[in-house]
Length: 287
Length: 287
Image 1: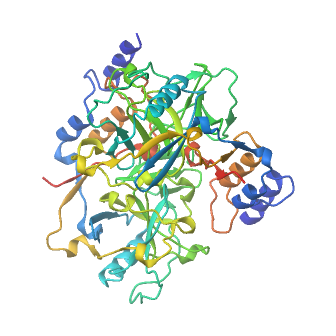
Image 2: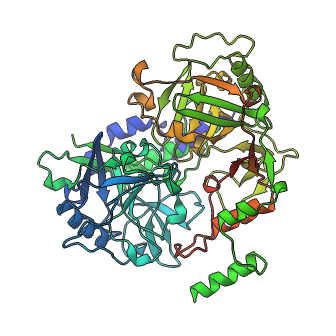
Image 3: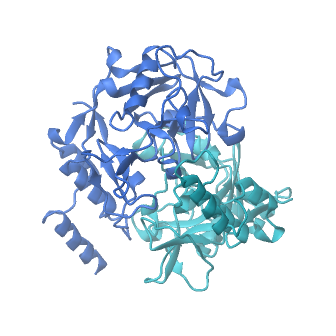
């Protein structure tokens, strides 16, 4: 009986057709449902074991994006290190000695914690969120909104990248960066400037040994993972063209639907709900 | 002005006193706010690099707990391996060849996905949850409830441990185990039997190299991490007595409050909300 009801829902939601698998949806998505990831807004962070690819979010943190790209093009990050790995929380990389000259970049920037909703696109999720009145997607990034405040911000989901800061909100800027490698620490939303997310290679960070010092800092430089280099992808002659599924596309909506309401036989009690940070954001090499 | 309001809230919530730090709360918690973790319901999973300590949850999965302990005491798991590590999802360990005899244990058990609420204690969280009508804590475990169904179940938060299964719901039992090592996959709630959580050593699993096969399985046995042994702590002569903060204690309530509403100067926009899987469950060695 329950099975019959589930089948009925599939038919209702998908206009008469039975639900397709996630792979089927992605494989048959029309070219117009994919967007090119701009190499000018993409960073390659090369670690000894491979490449971490980061997409920048200039619509949310324009000043931080400019500053991080300036630092990158000055080769500020080359030879720095991952100095902190706190389990179920963040990986953090910076100048261990805080000595390197920022050159034409800014050492500190005012925060870009949130921005006016304005005319930014927003694909809303239908389910309630613990932390924000509205959650969804903007330009392929997980976002949260508060219409009463008129604000939208990037959400601290897995693989999001931000600029660490000290107690003063004006001490961010980009010389100290972090990526979320655990359960979404959404209490950081609107408290730190997020400016991008990892598209590929997050496991190069998430699988690093955990720091045994306070809040996951490594106790000795011997434990650091060196950063070989960070480059703007557009500056790398053999950069790989990537595409991301448009979060305002029909294919994304269908993918979201089959993730919310699992119909494959393995699931016995589909939740028919989905939490913001459990939504996959598909990325592929351009065909 | 906002600061003044925040200070007022502190005074209201804490009865006139200013909020204490999490460390202060834990360090001054009376002995009665801690409970002894029962060594008869504790497993030691020894890996080459250290020990993973798992607390079992007999109130939620009595048959799986008995079966896993039977398998453990037959040394079923000794010499098996971690065969799957999917980034931001699960670590899974089992007999790679599915050949080992289960002896007096059961190969398969009926599911224990959820149980009647009955008279089980429940410390409710005040904030909404995406997946369940009510979430909170029972016996120190993160739980979710649906009063309409009269059911309560363990929630798939970071470090929870369960019994993998095939498509048939009756193919769990305990020969194939997994731990959550990423953002909480709450869509698995009520679809797999959870029977415990890792109290110590989760990073020995979460920092393992990611499997490069389909859904994170390792492609070759050379990539496996061997399981040296699994033991019931009570059977280990030098086992370490652990205590966990009671989730129905005053100290836990205060800890929860300062996690929901951060008052230290670093936080500029405290969320005044907390999601189930972002609540720490303090554990210490018995003093």
